[in-house]
Length: 276
Image (cartoon, rainbow, N blue to C red; front, side, top):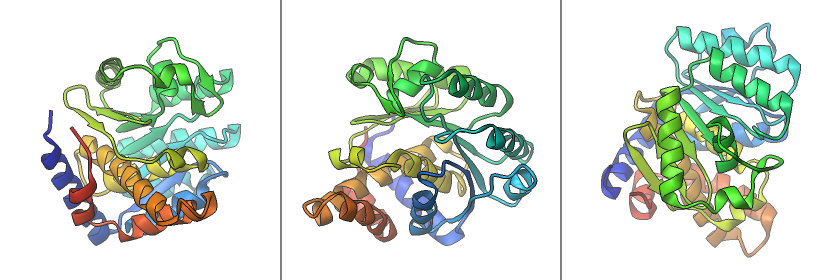
């Protein structure tokens, strides 16, 4: 397991790479949060593109540095675009981040999640505990697109086992986000403790986190550290946003998250990052 300072140093360096290289990140995401995902990537220093029509999706992936697939507002039209783009990314050895929003909530979502995982090699799987437990074949209960209270209340040891086992099974990095975030590539494990409770009151913070992971994946080959980078960045900036605008209200807090991401640097990560 990495020590705290080693993780934050690596994340800070990777953030500098994002700012310098400005990777193009292709997002096939949901229409509730697509604007937030684009803006959070721009604030990070990456370049977002949102193309979900089958006639161009794979071509856009071909010129991108990373692909983010998000099934938040699932429909039959975009599923084929997700698969085609994922296969193109695999062909070109580009990282694929998959956010299985609401997996376990409906047969349609479940079948789509299963198909994506079968047909596309995923680099990072990022979801809440209910989604990850469902994909793992474990008993889980979902509250729409949110994790259930019973799933989020499991201990870190159990959460680590879930993440490690699924990461080994899928040969990818699994990131479980919640009050405490657990990330594993099957060998390494990191536990992150940044964040603020107000993040749960803004639609799309999970989707934005997956987009951020895509930005970090677009400049490096260690997707374990890239996953930590995206998740830690959102957690730290949630804390900053709460301090700067939380007392005003949820709307101001929402915008303050993007402000904080735009001002994030390796020094802030070094000072505020909580990892073990």
